[in-house]
Image (tube, rainbow, N blue to C red; front, side, top):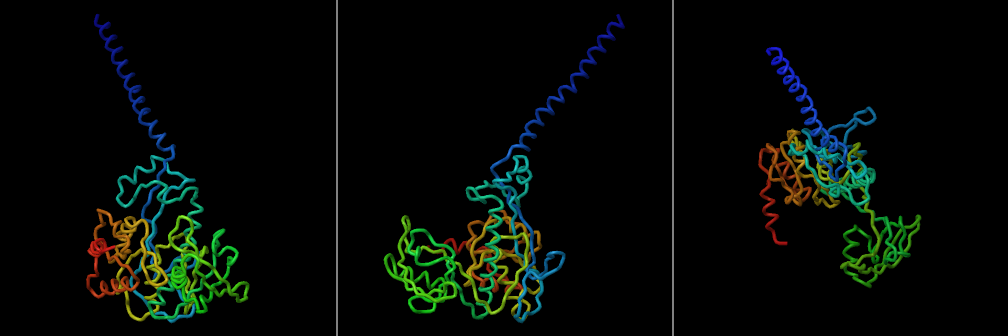
Amino acid sequence: MGRHDTSAERVRLTGAYGAAPRSRAWVLLVIAIPLLLAGAIPSPYAIERPGPVVDTLGEVRIDGKSQPVVSFADAKTYPTTGRLNLLTVQILGSPDRQRSWLSLVPALFDPSQRIAPLSDFFVEGQTSEDRDAQNTVLMASSQSTAAAAAFRELDEPVSEVLTVAQIAPESAADGVLQQGDVLTTLDGEPLADFAMLRERTMQAGDGGVLKLGIERDGEKRSVEVEPSVPEGGDEPLIGATISISYDLPSEVDVKLEDIGGPSAGMVFSIAMVDQLTPGDLLGGMTVSGTGTMSGDGEVGPIGGLEQKMWAASRADSDLFLMPLGNCADLPDRIPERVRIAPVATLSEAIDAVETAASGGTPAGVERCGAATAAPQ
């Protein structure tokens, strides 16, 4: 009887110990399958996060050699102090290299990262290589416009060279202008800049006539273009895409690798002005900034503002310069210890830096409220 009880108890215990591992295995399997699927199935989302920070007053290593980020071929330059950081963002994921659902999870718990649809970063049919190529062109363009703005800020002579980059089929320019034509005069006057061409086109209106002097293959010619309002449009156009380059007082060389886009333009301009003028603009501060720059000194809005603010915070920035046009993009949560100065022009950006360097307080986010309330 006793042995029968012992055997029965042994059977019951054996059964219990044998069932537990099988139950745990099922639980693990139930957990593992969704995780495996989440790690394998591509998602239609990308992650935007802070990218590299580069001191435009410092040096970078290219091909194993240290080289200044910004240098001048034949202009007198002056010593600088402090750090002037350009800020970048990284996009993880693309239409041709989609992120898995599982890879998105860490970004949910990091306030410096943003999960967004791929369509926020890529137009339909665009690949990561296409986007990189486009950003490389935009970076090169931003450097030349930044130089033009910097020299103009210093009252140095800068002239624009307008070149026909593309002709729209069946437009006013089709059959009249050619790709590569350099526009030199307008209605018998020297063509000063693109703004002049734009203004005269508007004045001529639909059916008016513009008399253009051009250089084609080294020969000077005169042509006439009749602006027209394209179907679905509301303004007269000549039907040509115009490329703008600048004739600068000194050649400027910017050395960067693997960074594209136009959003470093403002910081490049400030770095150039700092090097070209005596004195200590930054006063030893660390200043970080972002914003596009036009040739006449206008600061334009950019993408990835929140991620760049986090990059500025992590770089221990004493001042963060941002475009006034990005005020609507200010996040609810602003990283600690980030002093923000929204600016609309290169002159305002320089004034903000000088004010902070002298111990003052430049206008901050209160400017955003004023800009929002301003009449449209």
